[in-house]
Image 1: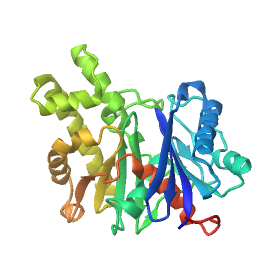
Image 2: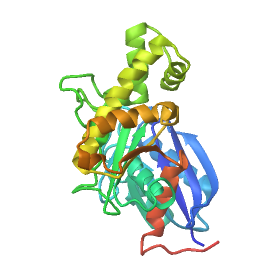
Image 3: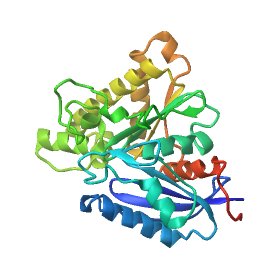
Image 4: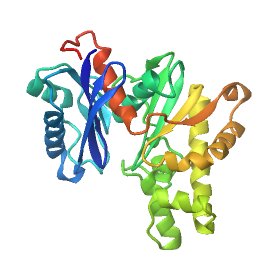
Length: 305
């Protein structure tokens, strides 16, 4: 069996894994991203992680990275949380250093590939992935294929406008979905309303325990998330929307409510056999998806396990 290196570059940490082509993860390592230090520093940490995992048995490197990733593997744009990330030729730099095939997509596009091959998207031709974490990302699979768009930037669901002139988003626009349903947004809205600092996960847990303040904020969050998902389902008519990311598991108790609110906003045709589900793979979806890019490439060569 072939082995590839899968890398997931997130806002707070970079995770890497040695992944077999049957989906078995042989080894995992991670480092803090330290995104505030700039793109060159982040590149150094990606390479340090790859060096730690070792490339001796790898047939290639697959990367799922935050930001909008061009078809050539270059970072086209990023939010203010990743300074000096835009413009880095990620694929070219890694190819030059390791002399291996390198494939690069957006991190949530990698999540979608992971779910397609090994998770909740198996056997599903049309689905959408929505990653809810520090930010909000998305990816679209249509007719069994990952939709990348003209420049590689398709699926930026977090930056659809939910409310014109609304809350400021880290991308610089106002009213984006990310400004309402990311973990950061939930924590900020709770502080603005109640003057208390809490994490998004803590707020959702306290809502489940019956805390009135947390429940009120949860209801706003769920309403905004449901509206965003309903808009996606109306536009794309997927069979599933798969939720992943840092706060997705905290939403598990509220998933039936979210699904009900979404379906109420859909046409009869869009609602047929439609579901909202949690990722089956959790943190491993992006690693598996990134590695799958290598295995699906006809250029993959290397030793087998």
